Image (tube, rainbow, N blue to C red; front, side, top):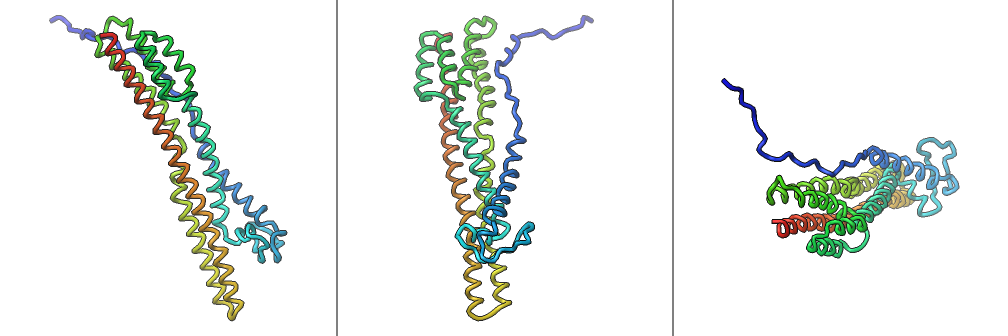
Length: 287
């Protein structure tokens, strides 16, 4: 009996021109730890400087027991050990706000995205693919990168005689999807820190306040008279610094998270529109 061998019935799948970006996120995970350490140093040596108190604890140590804060800022020191953590959270938010701002500005590219897509559509309507690719080079953003990857496959499919029109359109669409899959994670990277801190900072602030209230009422139980009431009110005021710092950090994080997600949604819409432009253009011009 003769041996039967499978025969190829379809053309080989074209290799993708999209190359995955090699990038790690270890530095991003180290940044919050570094910010908390810096927050402790600010709390311990700047806010907690002995010159800021009328009764400083000159023995030093990890958490000196200073008393008699001279300024509102030095009163924040008396809020307790949660304060440096909250300062670290605030520094983390500011760090990733700057990092995401620079990344999204770069991803947006130069010029208006809608205008860029219209220019590409014009060049494709005139069957001038090279000019469309040149527009992508000038755009220099995520939409331009995705469009450029799709245009390269678009150009290859024009001269391809082995696939029918539907298969060529699918090849262009797949190239656009692969390029999109590489661009979007870079846009959304590190937003998880902003969303997490938005929830955690408020809880940390409340935890610091509760701990301060516990200390205040414990001190009230050890003393009496008008002096006790004075210490209680002072202790409550110091404890509320935790709440204020936690709420402020959370508010900044939420606002910037919403700003960045709105910007990313605009870029994502431009990417989707660019993919639709390529497939529809090819299907109508190269039947």
